[in-house]
Length: 195
Image 1 (cartoon, rainbow, N blue to C red):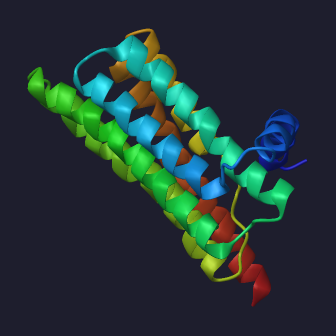
Image 2 (cartoon, one colour):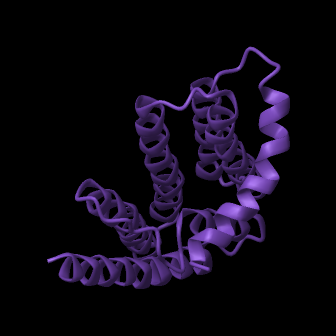
């Protein structure tokens, strides 16, 4: 089983009952997407104000919410290409706004290397998602990787909750680099095979 399959299977078992319940409400998948993004912005504000515990909890809750929009769309037959684009775009903004708030805190507290590490983490985490998007634009599936968005979010949130932000950011940076290289290699191999 591919390492992305177990994530998907766990996600389906967790989100399907919630999607069924949400299907009886007026909420649409796009409304849930926007609500989750608003929640992550609020959590990022708490992080910027150095309320790390509550910010970390907010990041976790918002990330859980993010799993429900797609599940609701599939359950109600309201899957749309625009919805997929909106979800992916706000996923990137969500990751970015949390890391920017961490960079802000590091800079405010005079930790230049901490701010630089946050910036590197932002670039590396985006590169993981970009490689997948670019590959899929060429018709190549590329969901492989040890450290996808799920793992990145969990590590950052836990780092905030236990007040070990630098360690969490460093872990995400290192494993995002590894995952980006892993995905790039897999895409290269698949393209070579397709020739």
